[in-house]
Length: 211
Image 1 (spheres, rainbow, N blue to C red):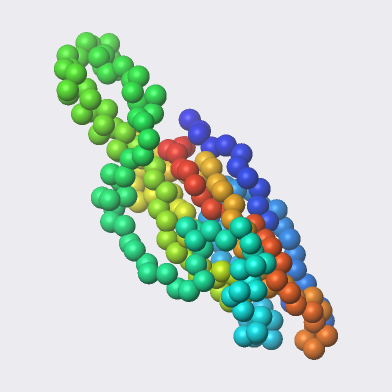
Image 2 (cartoon, rainbow, N blue to C red):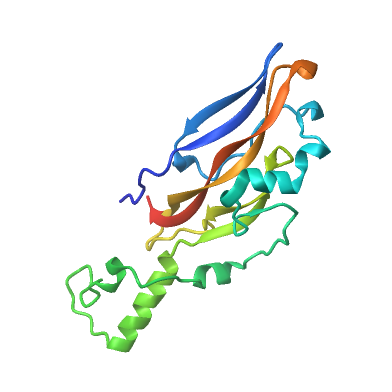
């Protein structure tokens, strides 16, 4: 049983250093690879933005309305760790129809089961909590070559199986994209030209229990 869908395709920015050329490769990648892995790039500080390139007023103007304080931060945000219990109990929206309409008046072997309304409601609530797949958000430092450099990234809760019996796990089914600025250099050493370019960064926004 699969709930996975085709999600947004995003641009994964990777920096590579060749024998005599520094270039940017833009590679589309399917969203089932979310969250975005740590980018491997040249560690030479020559390709980092200078202090004058990090003027907040200028960069805010360049990013414009794409700046979203709910998912990005200029300075290091205070990290808040959710406990497993808090994560599991945070149910949002109405109960899914596949759970609400579940017929539990009969066992898998055809035997009738007597269950009062209150007991049924409690069982379905427990089942919803058990199979719920919340998105767990944590702040991630993208490094000095992104602006803002901190992003609130989503991950599917996967500390245990989400099905009964066990075997299925929470997987991403939807994502949103946020626009950041990326420090991009062309050329090599003193002959290089660097500037800020807008790039889209995908963030997991919904997870579901899937095979």
